Image (cartoon, rainbow, N blue to C red; front, side, top):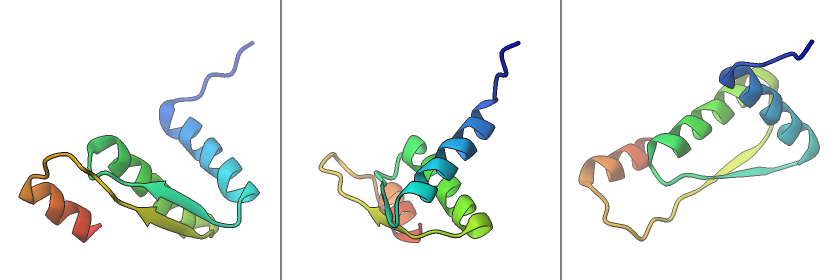
Length: 74
């Protein structure tokens, strides 16, 4: 029987693998929905299991003021 994970559990397994195998992890954060979800999943993982993470933000596209405020807040 094939064991299928939901998306949340699959992300948790992958983050566990990443944080166990690397001393320091960098997350590229554009301020969009996808990178926001990844950043929050990493923060949740670090709070629960520990680890070190840096956040890298660079976006050459047009930035809306609300996106810039969101990036600054994160």
